Length: 149
Image 1 (tube, one colour):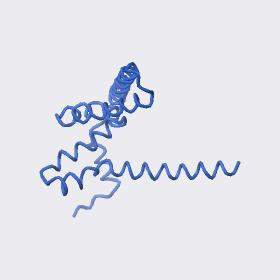
Image 2 (cartoon, one colour):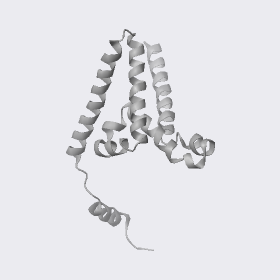
Image 3 (cartoon, one colour):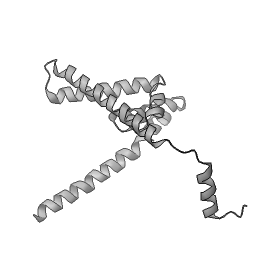
Image 4 (cartoon, helix red, strand yellow):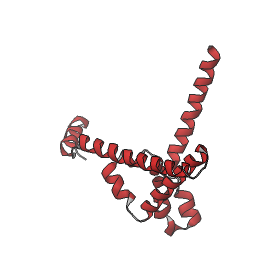
Protein backbone atom coordinates (compact mmCIF):
# COMPACT_ATOMS: atom_id res chain seq x y z
CA UNK A 1 0.00 0.00 0.00
CA UNK A 2 1.27 3.48 -0.86
CA UNK A 3 1.89 6.20 1.70
CA UNK A 4 0.63 9.01 -0.52
CA UNK A 5 -1.71 11.51 1.13
CA UNK A 6 -5.08 12.42 -0.32
CA UNK A 7 -3.83 15.95 -1.02
CA UNK A 8 -0.76 14.64 -2.89
CA UNK A 9 -2.91 12.15 -4.78
CA UNK A 10 -5.32 14.89 -5.89
CA UNK A 11 -2.40 17.10 -6.95
CA UNK A 12 -0.88 14.27 -8.97
CA UNK A 13 -4.23 13.34 -10.48
CA UNK A 14 -4.92 16.95 -11.49
CA UNK A 15 -1.50 17.27 -13.11
CA UNK A 16 -2.02 14.08 -15.14
CA UNK A 17 -5.61 14.81 -16.19
CA UNK A 18 -6.18 16.02 -19.71
CA UNK A 19 -7.42 19.60 -19.76
CA UNK A 20 -10.83 20.03 -21.34
CA UNK A 21 -11.16 22.69 -24.05
CA UNK A 22 -14.16 24.41 -22.45
CA UNK A 23 -14.68 27.10 -25.11
CA UNK A 24 -14.56 24.61 -27.98
CA UNK A 25 -16.84 22.14 -26.17
CA UNK A 26 -19.33 24.88 -25.31
CA UNK A 27 -19.37 26.15 -28.89
CA UNK A 28 -19.99 22.67 -30.33
CA UNK A 29 -22.71 21.97 -27.76
CA UNK A 30 -24.39 25.26 -28.60
CA UNK A 31 -24.18 24.75 -32.36
CA UNK A 32 -25.33 21.14 -32.39
CA UNK A 33 -28.07 21.78 -29.81
CA UNK A 34 -29.18 24.74 -31.92
CA UNK A 35 -29.15 22.54 -35.02
CA UNK A 36 -31.37 19.98 -33.28
CA UNK A 37 -33.76 22.78 -32.36
CA UNK A 38 -33.67 24.19 -35.90
CA UNK A 39 -34.50 20.74 -37.29
CA UNK A 40 -37.34 20.55 -34.79
CA UNK A 41 -38.65 23.93 -35.98
CA UNK A 42 -38.43 22.86 -39.63
CA UNK A 43 -40.36 19.69 -38.78
CA UNK A 44 -42.93 21.72 -36.84
CA UNK A 45 -43.44 24.05 -39.80
CA UNK A 46 -43.77 21.05 -42.12
CA UNK A 47 -46.29 19.22 -39.92
CA UNK A 48 -48.25 22.44 -39.33
CA UNK A 49 -48.56 22.88 -43.10
CA UNK A 50 -50.38 19.52 -43.23
CA UNK A 51 -53.41 21.09 -41.51
CA UNK A 52 -52.99 19.35 -38.17
CA UNK A 53 -53.46 21.04 -34.80
CA UNK A 54 -50.48 22.57 -33.02
CA UNK A 55 -50.69 19.84 -30.38
CA UNK A 56 -50.54 17.05 -32.99
CA UNK A 57 -47.75 18.82 -34.90
CA UNK A 58 -45.71 19.09 -31.69
CA UNK A 59 -46.22 15.41 -30.94
CA UNK A 60 -45.18 14.48 -34.47
CA UNK A 61 -41.99 16.55 -34.12
CA UNK A 62 -41.12 14.75 -30.87
CA UNK A 63 -41.77 11.33 -32.38
CA UNK A 64 -39.75 12.18 -35.49
CA UNK A 65 -36.76 13.45 -33.49
CA UNK A 66 -36.87 10.32 -31.32
CA UNK A 67 -37.04 8.12 -34.43
CA UNK A 68 -34.10 9.94 -36.08
CA UNK A 69 -31.93 9.67 -32.96
CA UNK A 70 -32.83 5.99 -32.49
CA UNK A 71 -31.86 5.24 -36.09
CA UNK A 72 -28.63 7.24 -35.80
CA UNK A 73 -27.84 5.37 -32.57
CA UNK A 74 -28.53 2.00 -34.20
CA UNK A 75 -26.16 2.69 -37.09
CA UNK A 76 -23.44 4.09 -34.80
CA UNK A 77 -23.58 7.72 -35.93
CA UNK A 78 -25.25 9.33 -32.89
CA UNK A 79 -22.42 8.42 -30.52
CA UNK A 80 -19.87 10.06 -32.84
CA UNK A 81 -21.96 13.24 -32.98
CA UNK A 82 -22.44 13.16 -29.19
CA UNK A 83 -18.71 12.76 -28.61
CA UNK A 84 -18.11 15.97 -30.55
CA UNK A 85 -21.15 17.95 -29.34
CA UNK A 86 -21.57 16.74 -25.75
CA UNK A 87 -24.55 18.31 -24.04
CA UNK A 88 -25.81 19.67 -27.37
CA UNK A 89 -27.05 16.18 -28.16
CA UNK A 90 -27.68 14.89 -24.67
CA UNK A 91 -30.07 17.53 -23.37
CA UNK A 92 -32.79 17.50 -26.07
CA UNK A 93 -35.26 14.64 -26.44
CA UNK A 94 -32.80 13.05 -28.86
CA UNK A 95 -30.42 12.36 -25.99
CA UNK A 96 -33.17 10.64 -24.06
CA UNK A 97 -33.91 8.39 -27.05
CA UNK A 98 -30.20 7.59 -27.30
CA UNK A 99 -30.10 6.67 -23.60
CA UNK A 100 -32.89 4.14 -24.19
CA UNK A 101 -31.66 2.64 -27.48
CA UNK A 102 -27.98 2.23 -26.53
CA UNK A 103 -28.52 -0.17 -23.59
CA UNK A 104 -31.25 -1.97 -25.51
CA UNK A 105 -28.81 -2.72 -28.33
CA UNK A 106 -26.01 -3.64 -25.95
CA UNK A 107 -28.01 -6.24 -24.02
CA UNK A 108 -29.82 -7.99 -26.91
CA UNK A 109 -27.43 -10.99 -26.68
CA UNK A 110 -28.62 -11.60 -23.12
CA UNK A 111 -32.19 -12.01 -24.37
CA UNK A 112 -35.19 -9.79 -24.75
CA UNK A 113 -36.51 -10.24 -21.23
CA UNK A 114 -33.42 -10.54 -19.00
CA UNK A 115 -31.23 -8.44 -21.30
CA UNK A 116 -33.20 -5.70 -23.02
CA UNK A 117 -36.17 -5.66 -20.66
CA UNK A 118 -34.04 -5.36 -17.54
CA UNK A 119 -31.29 -3.06 -18.83
CA UNK A 120 -33.19 -0.72 -21.20
CA UNK A 121 -33.69 1.94 -18.53
CA UNK A 122 -30.26 1.56 -16.90
CA UNK A 123 -29.25 5.02 -18.13
CA UNK A 124 -32.63 6.73 -18.44
CA UNK A 125 -34.14 5.21 -15.28
CA UNK A 126 -32.43 7.54 -12.80
CA UNK A 127 -33.38 10.51 -14.97
CA UNK A 128 -37.02 9.45 -14.94
CA UNK A 129 -36.96 8.70 -11.23
CA UNK A 130 -35.32 11.92 -10.10
CA UNK A 131 -37.21 13.97 -12.68
CA UNK A 132 -40.50 12.61 -11.35
CA UNK A 133 -39.43 13.12 -7.74
CA UNK A 134 -38.33 16.68 -8.46
CA UNK A 135 -41.62 17.48 -10.19
CA UNK A 136 -43.57 16.17 -7.17
CA UNK A 137 -41.47 18.27 -4.78
CA UNK A 138 -41.86 21.38 -6.95
CA UNK A 139 -45.59 20.71 -7.23
CA UNK A 140 -45.92 20.46 -3.46
CA UNK A 141 -43.94 23.66 -2.95
CA UNK A 142 -46.13 25.43 -5.50
CA UNK A 143 -49.30 24.04 -3.88
CA UNK A 144 -48.32 25.16 -0.39
CA UNK A 145 -46.97 28.54 -1.51
CA UNK A 146 -50.20 29.19 -3.40
CA UNK A 147 -52.22 28.27 -0.32
CA UNK A 148 -50.32 30.81 1.80
CA UNK A 149 -51.41 33.74 -0.36
